[in-house]
Image 1 (cartoon, rainbow, N blue to C red):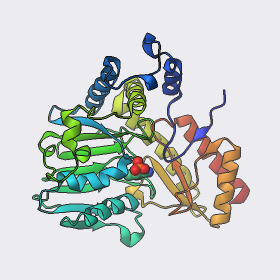
Image 2: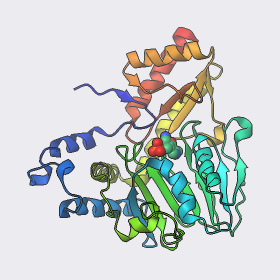
Image 3: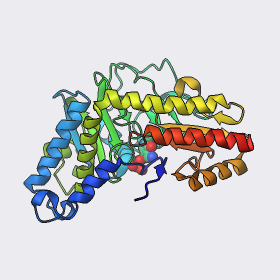
Image 4: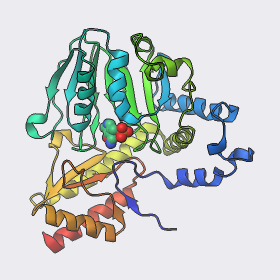
Amino acid sequence: MKRIFNFNAGPSAIDLSVLEQAKAEFTDFCDAGYSICEMSHRNKRFEEILNTAIADLKALYTINNDYFVIFMQGGASLQFAQIPMNLYKGGVAQYVDTGTWTQNAIKEAKIQQINYEIVASSQDCAYNYIPSDIKFSPNADYAYICSNNTIHGTQYKSLPKTQCPLVVDSSSDFLSREIDFKNIGFFYAGAQKNAGVAGVTIAIIRKDLVYLAKQNVPFILRYSTFVDKNSLYNTPNTFGIYIFSLVLKWIKKQGGLAKISEKNSKKAEILYNTIDEFEGFYLPFARKDSRSMMNVTFNIKGGEEIEKLFVKQAEENDMIGLKGHRSLGGIRASIYNALNLEATQNLCEFMREFVRKFG
Ligand code: PMP
């Protein structure tokens, strides 16, 4: 069997053991005589998968009973719209603008005509850094951030402390490190990077925020609907939740989030070291203090032509997904949880060789 090194930004790499288990169980799930894909979401076996996934996620993040875990659809992008619908109380919602995904979230706040403010932005430097010393009002309805900016390759080293509920789009660094939930109100991610397959959004919501939606918010868009029915109000993405449950078990086996985070730091370190070693040829995009552990973005001296060649030659060496996002160009190596050290070392070696040939 051939497995290539997958640096895609999402959907992205899934550990082979997870895929193998899904494959082994695919046609006959745990002696049921049929597939998980053919199973009712009301089936006890499926409910067990769902409840175990919730328990495992809470255990991994050490989340207490002040929080619920819910599964929704519509991608992380639907959350941009659902958040103001559900969490805005008529005061002010405060956003930090760190790139495309926060801009999209702000757009949704705007069309709902809520009172929102952008309290910090890194737009002045093309989003190459995370603003420091962000001041949120203690009385804001919520404070909104994107913890890892997938396109620009920037990441909060630690999450801001707020007195109001902190809302975090963690789509591209979900389950990649330990998080202190103390001031977090709502924490969410699309599954397709660190948590499995596309089509399921995982959200962790604090109890006091569940029932704030106004009466004109459709039931299907209210967080309370998902909390009250344990994400079984309608048919959820059963296969996505199943794969998510396997990913959680794999993370547990790896030793949990502390260990995962250690591995992620190591991978990021060797990759950034390689970029820095050949500074002037490889041109890192993100400012050093804001570098992402998940999405490593850089340009190559000489521009588009040589970057195209880099991507092409990487593909010839079984490394895919290295082309930067269409809005930014350049190179982006996504080194999520399932992308192992060997793959990262392989890329570093390729980068050295590429300098030798073209630098
Ligand atoms: N937020 C972040 C940080 C993302 O990286 C993405 C997608 N790459 C989104 C939101 C949008 O996710 P979706 O495509 O699931 O709507």
